[in-house]
Length: 62
Image (tube, rainbow, N blue to C red; front, side, top):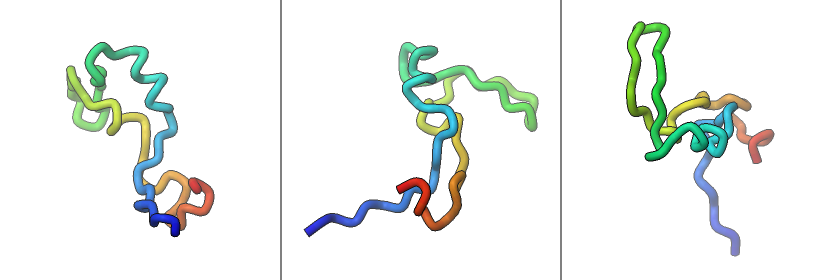
């Protein structure tokens, strides 16, 4: 029997492997325009994406 996968809620519009080219330790520098703040070490897995980018039904993502 197949196992159920967890629903994908965070979808990347910038592939993580692109961002890893700018990193030596799986983090990159990020500027937050809304807060006008620079973050020196932000995790790559949380950058370049959005929750439910392709919709909440996951049909397109799957």
